[in-house]
Image (cartoon, rainbow, N blue to C red; front, top):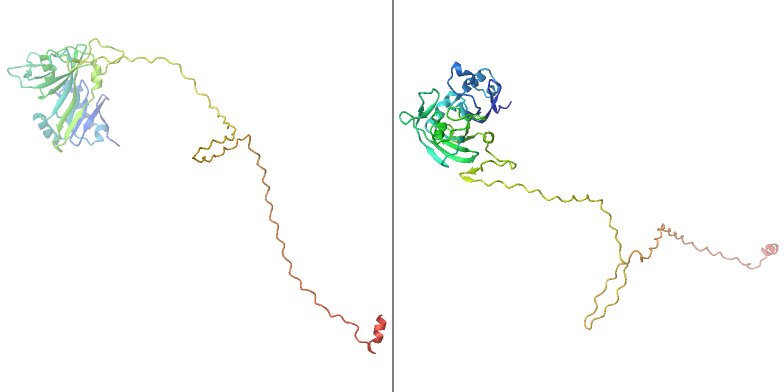
Length: 360
């Protein structure tokens, strides 16, 4: 049987597989699943533990691949969705880990902000560190913070929010969220640094690109964007709705699409009736008058017109052919009768005298 295109979690939900090869498995991480710590308090929503339990239970998604091991190579925050890369063997952990630590992986995130940034494009390099006053939170720390770098680009603005692409060069905890907060526009739905949103956290990992450490081929993995954008009020604008604030792209106002003009109502043509067979009539042919002969040019021969049906003489019926009369066979020539010698009376003798008298 073919392999599944999803990973099944203990709650029965299916997670889409975005990419798979001999070394790694990339999934579209759903919101609410964390990648650590692996203690009793967080075991119910720990994604790594859920995947490991599925392998041990022999679920079909793992059995059809012969999986015995799976481990995340990088991390995403619990409310963040999108591309998550998993190693399928222990031997793949170290080579792929070097790609991330060596900053050879290009990561692209899509963020929705509460508020519109002042610049269309900018790069933030503020150092970040843990907040000792609030466990689980981080902050900008110029003294003990670690270096971090994120490049931002505004894609669209609408209704007081902005759709921003983020390209983090480093991978600090809450890096994109804190750098946008420092720009005065926190991520929508961020309950730690901003305000909640019905659609959740407006942050999604949409692309991951890297050179494969084994085959050296360039790999690019993408996650879908439309549903995420629609959940936060972005994407195509219906013609029947006009936004309160005109949308912009790179700071320039986007003209509203023209309203469709209804076509003028025209009477519907009557259905065509059955075509009538044309009656062909042939004009009565008349013999043309003789044209005047030119002085030095002989007249062209006139082709007589075909007689019409009305003047055409009836054609006499052709006699049926009679069988040929047999020729008489000539009779064989008759031979003329032979001439018999007439016997005359001859001389009268004494012997025949008496006989002639008796005959006479």
